[in-house]
Length: 425
Image (cartoon, rainbow, N blue to C red; front, side):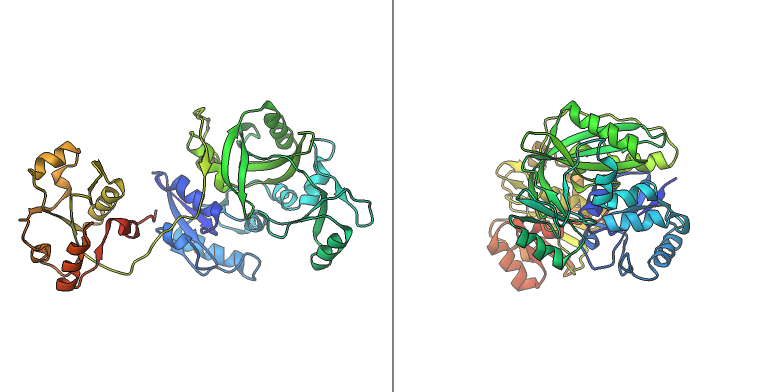
């Protein structure tokens, strides 16, 4: 029986990774909710806008209304502040929160508290008092924050005082100059650390690791075991460490939630959020991880929403479905999406060879098309498009111009097909 899963806020990098991790699961139906009109609208088929902000009055009541309306079984918090809020209100919320217990979430939300608890257990950064002599540069970080928001690398006491006056919650920490790593972890319901995988944060943008690769060193496993022994985790969590000048690994933060770049291990077989859900359902879970030499690199990616309805797709063949002697996989992806949505697909081509033979050559079934029309070289394609409730796709500008001027329907070049793809799951 499928379970309903709510992700909030669904448009964060965390929420988008949850979508990718569960999009094709046959066990769960995804619902995405947000307080602002965010990117979640473009990737979540079931999108719920307009929830109050996490610290607004009535937030828990609003969450419960969504839970009741959509029969939500599990909620995945996709922001650090939301993790703590939902964990603290688990007893009042009518769905299971996928995170660790409230006390663990509370400790992890505070960098100062985290360093205090782990001091003497694993290396933590030196925290300077206001009147203490500081070794510059000094790193200023909010006690409760995420990413690089509100952080500053400073070189003088004057700068320290300036930023602390603006934000008294800042911690003054020793500056760690070395490499930075994230260790992605999973702890089952028995408290056993089932998986700990380290990855180097090779390139970072706005506090998000946008290029990362696996690192295999037993020291990361030792740190993970020590953290897991000290705090009570359940399901997915991670921690970040950074090197001192002498290469010693120092704890930066811990978070009892999924991370966007956990996709690096997901593609090797470790689906952290799926494991967390199954664990909450009382199932015994195990890890099967391929030891692949894989690198993840992330960048801004475009999604489109075109307010255009159509029932028929007229599509060219040469240099449209087949480009440079190979199948255009983006084009074929769109055609299958159109077929899934019960659109009629008409192949409209001037192909000189027997089209059935060429389709077979590229392993494309003629059954993909509702109709195949091969026209003479001197005929216009616009003459063969019978319905105005259509779109036309062709690599040729002249062909598109003819159809657009004569029929006034939307026409698309090969480069614009990405705007027709539907990524909602």
